[in-house]
Length: 107
Length: 126
Image 1 (cartoon, chains in turn yellow, blue):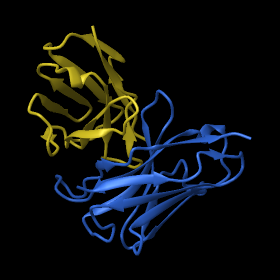
Image 2: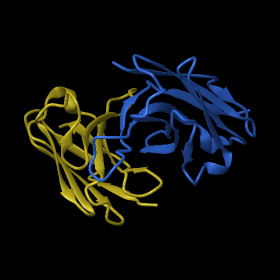
Image 3: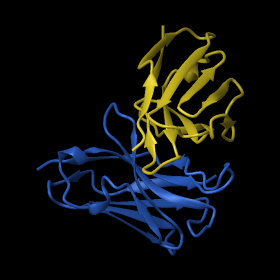
């Protein structure tokens, strides 16, 4: 099983600041990585797929980069609705796996 | 806009079978373009993929749960279902049904979850 390790566990930032979230895979997943946002009490929402492709309706302030084992989700300027938990997910190997999450909280 | 809705008991006794159904609206499960999946999430943890089913009835399960999982679908009702046998407290979680993209990605099937139900908490307790 591919283990996805996300860091930091918690990111404390203010609205308008830039957020940089990391996801590291235990072995290469090529570009086959997605990012999800989860608000409290809600289901995850697909943000980015295959490393850098924004899903339908996702604002341009969300961007993804990386390849192999190291990936980054960047939120260029945090809006109030962006404070949430973010998960990465790989599709390169079975079983499909998710990371443990990064919480972006208001500083 | 496709919507998914889980239904089923919120409380299951240890060693019994957890049974959930997902009703899909706004789109047909009888489609080659998607898989239909179950995902669970323990409190404070990342999601865990349980398995998926295709419109043909073909299934693929997470090997860690495979011996206890069965998925099925009812195209006449636009529903798919999950059964998890011999449950324990470790199976207490929020269970989500989700649609899985098949196409539009590099190198073949996507296997990303683009629509989710709201989730249902299942507690295993006597």
